[in-house]
Amino acid sequence: MIGLSLKLSQIQMILLVFVRVAAIVFSAPLFDSRTIPSLFKIGLALAAAVLLYPLLGQGMPMPAGGFTALGFGIVGEMLVGLIIGFTVRLIFAAAEMAGQLAGFQMGLAIANVFDPMTSMQMPLLSQLESMIAMLIFLAVNAHHLVLRALAESFRIIPLLGFRFNRSVMAMLSELTGAMFVTAVKIAAPVMVALLLTSLTLGLVARVVPQMNIFIVAMPIKIVIGLVFLALSLPFLAGFMGHVFVNLGNDLVLLLKAMR
Image (cartoon, rainbow, N blue to C red; front, side):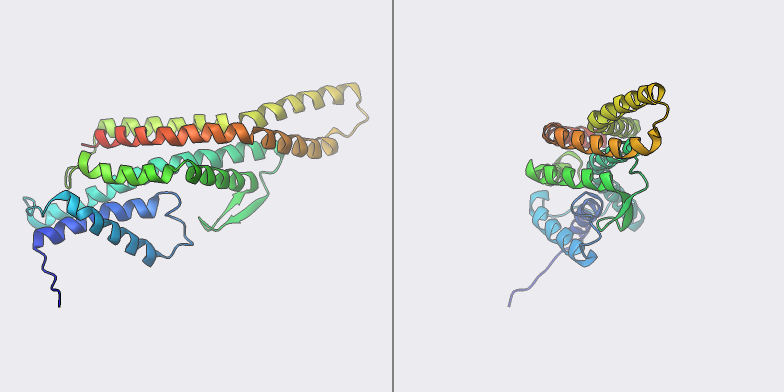
């Protein structure tokens, strides 16, 4: 019969590793879906913590201040995981925002569907763009970058070594601003096409005032928007793939800022 004997320092280390991994699992895309049972996520985080434990040494002393300091350390480890998950989530938020921008121009902003991943109502094109982003995320193996960032986080930021400073805030603000730029770039082909369509319909309304332009414009905008959305998909795949590839560098820089 095999006995399992762990010191208090080893249990403490596994707990801290588990908290950081669990924060990423519950916040990063693909893993954070509400269709995945919470018990499975907890088991996955615990299994990852056990696998990562041998790479971190044989334990650590109780920090000065006892359990109070350990409690603050657990909060710090949770913040590390949440920041990593939030950074990855920003890219998918950009795809969803692009769908909202394009859908508003096409007149589909009111049409919502149920998103099983978030259990919320989401515009049609936002759901489509989010699904495309997820497929590209898996196709370019960007989920491997998230797992690699998780492993690298323990090398760059040792346990209880998290520091929340101005550099972290500056990088998070920069990445949030880049989300809006990415959303506009994704939606740009459809937005430009619909803007030119609106200008053309405005000229037609001036030339042929007898035409009820409001009734004609709606189906025309939907058709043109869908056509240009389909034509832009190959370019969208390349652009999103480039964004996901750069995600690894962004995560490393963000982790270095948290030291």
